[in-house]
Length: 222
Image (cartoon, rainbow, N blue to C red; front, side, top):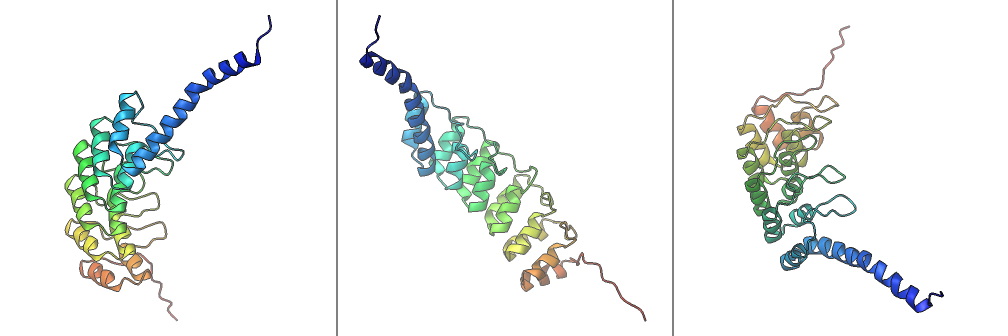
């Protein structure tokens, strides 16, 4: 029995339809999260789409919404039980991204939802400190952030703030009993970092608080 070309085409289209539909849904999910389109996300979720869908870089819908400060979208995703502490390819979480970008309302929602504040690598507090978001840094500390938790190369929130030149964050961390003597791989303390990046006001503040250089000084005697 001969199978007509028209029949073959019909079968091919039928088989391809679910793939095309999935691709369209995927694109719609990613775009909706990036744009903060809650109503579209609600419709897609109602049709069974996963709220933990990720883009090619491992960013979840929650990360995309948090990164761009879409408060209502973040709230919807949290209530929809999206994973709060998932990490993307760079190791970032939704809370890290929101803290770095300075989206305080988003940070508040994530903290209320139970997002982790302490983790390996750069913490949300270190991100907030580096970017100079003092109010967010304060929120994170009140929520249990370890002020001395360091990244792989030894960068603490204080060192990050000293490098970024954010004196209000430095004041906050010193008042919260940050360890002034912590060093990065090079042996430099927050005082050394502030000095190296020409943040003299911060260097003076750290020095007055008791901070010292981590650099060894050798004296040649003749």
